[in-house]
Amino acid sequence: MKAIRRAGFGIVCALLVLACAPDDQTKPEQAATPAPPASPSRPTLPAPRPSPPAEAPQSEAPPPDPLAPTPERILLHTARPGESLPEVAGRYDEAPRFLRRWNRLEAGTRELHTGQRLQVRATREPPPRERITYLTREGESLSSIARAHGIDARTWGRQLRRDRDAFLPVGTELELWSDPTLRAWVAADIPVPEQPSARVPAGAFSIGATDDGAVANAVRIPEGPGWSLRFEHRAWGTTHSVRATVEALERFSQTSDYAGRVRLWSMSRHYGGPLPDHESHQSGRDLDVKLPLRADLSETLAVRPAWIDLDALLALLAAFADTGAVQRIFLDYEIQERLHAQALAQGVDPAKLEALLQYPRPPLAEAGLVRHLEGHADHFHVRFACPPWGVACTDR
Ligand SMILES: [Zn+2]
Image: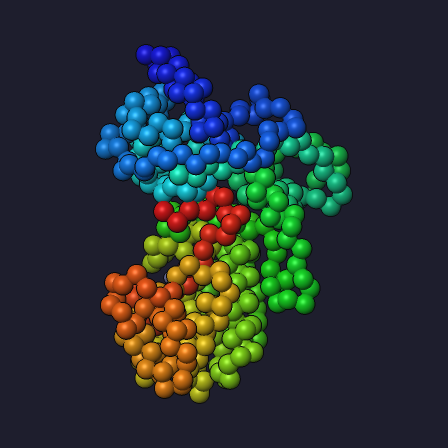
């Protein structure tokens, strides 16, 4: 029966080659070097996206039939060495919990074994990863090679059972699997020395979702004269979000006359994953920022509504918005109301204000970059977007 089911799926694939041959179908031992073409262009398939099946099929021999309404979207993904479930989910722009459900995996499953097959309802088809045979040069470690190739150094080091930061003997031959999009992004990332963000290294990216994910090759928010970190061990993120943070804070220092320091709370832990007392903050693209207090008050005092420096808060929100890297900011509605009044009194352009704040539209309105969310009366929460090269990053 298994064989028949597999054969059945094979036929579907043969008929729908473009849809069925995307990410990592290649088995390492069978893959050729040089690798398959980077990013085959695919037609857009006009398939609707049905809700996940109530009864997921066996992961061992996934029959296509239960998911038949849009068979052209059902892909069989074979896990490459070291690949995690949130990473697979992110690559297909899917929620990790759906992948688990479809494949009858336990809640919270993250690790996969090499060659494990997963059914995916793909709404995005990442480019196939390429196998590269790499010969090390002087002064290289697994970490440096991983960063340069868009690979998660920690997972790779574990998989090879090697210290990822140790220098490797010159000429060591390594096999690696690299995503062409991520690799091209790092290769093109040549920082402009005079820009503040040049202090933030390249190569850190999100894996999976903000509430079910990790950070690869995380970078830490650097020190700066205008800000302070409350939790140094929770100040890790992606290159994209940490650079945008530095850019926003530098811009705020230069354009605002706020005499205090901005107090940063949590971003993510060093490798991401669950963060106590938070649902998100797992993939290095969430940042909590304490509401700025009047500069004559200590920055470590608990926030009281009367102590908030509204002018500074408005400028700070605008500085984050101006980076263009922000997907959403969460801030209590009543504070938005006060900000709105203050901004109008200052003569802020109403059109700009409308784009920035949800207020005066209702607290559930899909409007404005800043949105109301419970629990955001003493800090605001910045959610950075998945960048265009974020092939392992999902918003679902
Ligand atoms: Zn938060």
